[in-house]
Image 1 (cartoon, rainbow, N blue to C red):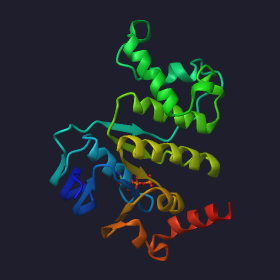
Image 2 (tube, rainbow, N blue to C red):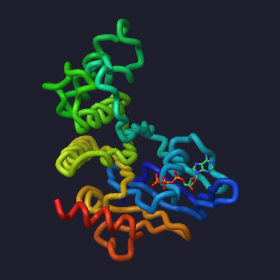
Image 3 (cartoon, rainbow, N blue to C red):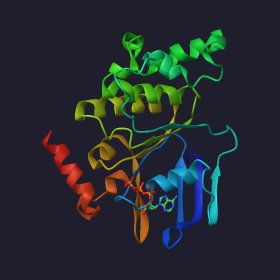
Image 4 (cartoon, protein in one colour):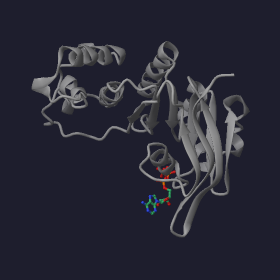
Length: 237
Ligand SMILES: Nc1ncnc2c1ncn2[C@@H]1O[C@H](COP(=O)(O)OP(=O)(O)OP(=O)(O)O)[C@@H](O)[C@H]1O
């Protein structure tokens, strides 16, 4: 059996007057691709914050594999930058380098070249970030996260603002990284089609519990209605 990179054990968490999870227990195997789905406000972002150590469990435990150590990469949904935003795509990605620009080492620059290549941004790297397409901006966020050489990548609604073709392009890239490097992926999404196409299992958070199942067990008809409607819109394309 593949080893777990992350174990969540009997996790309880909620905000004042609003319990979110009780007894949430699941594991992510190294190299797995998992979708995190659920209706708006059910607690997906809060779970990510717990997994990233920004919030503490009220009960239960979140444990990461010790050896090799787990390095988390976090890819948010891109934010619209003004057209006048001055940095090139390359410099924007490089903001995540440990050393500030003038002091970036040759090694840093090589790593930057590698992540630009891995995200297929070579030809566009000197274009202005403010003028880049949504897909290029989103790939730049992915490249930034890859600079930390993560072995666990969290995609937080990273495809939400993209058109269908660009969503597929981004997810193809993530799948390629998963297959080449064994990257473990947690993909927060409202898009059941993408979830089905790219991930092997899903964690569905519900108001009264959760479901962790392999993707071929997903019955779209029993999923929260708002997720089903997103799915239908996508199918038209
Ligand atoms: N810091 C906080 N203090 C109090 N309540 C909070 C806080 N953060 C989130 N909440 C509430 O907890 C619930 C879960 O929020 P969360 O953002 O985790 O949901 P979500 O599933 O990611 O939603 P969406 O799909 O809309 O992004 C919401 O009702 C939210 O208003």
